[in-house]
Picture 1 (spheres, rainbow, N blue to C red):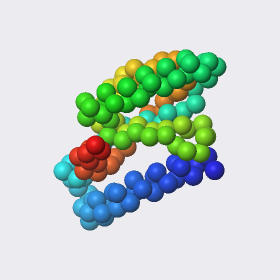
Picture 2 (cartoon, rainbow, N blue to C red):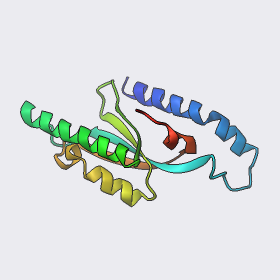
Picture 3 (cartoon, helix red, strand yellow):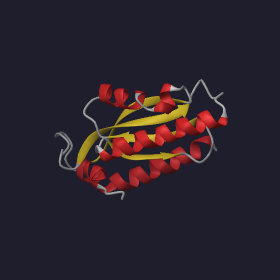
Picture 4 (cartoon, rainbow, N blue to C red):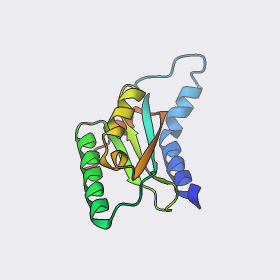
Length: 138
């Protein structure tokens, strides 16, 4: 069950990229079209080592976590974020629109939930559609 939400997310993202991947396959041996595909950084929010906060402290940390998400989104550095619903070790995801993994690490380390130890991060480069960053979530 832990991998169900992860599988559903990946299935949805693969569906988003399906046509773009087909177009890239017909162009084998050539560089991918940067007008269609780009590198993002996928950050998996994992259960952190410190989950012993009292409920008031945990609520304050969550409030700061949400404020951090909104700040990254307003700066166009965060393309997508959300929790997984299966209560597994992977708690949520960020897809970051930054140039380097160092920038992704810096952004995620500023999150109050990471700073407090409630969450940990695992970051991977991910190749996805340029149009993903053009989505207006408002």
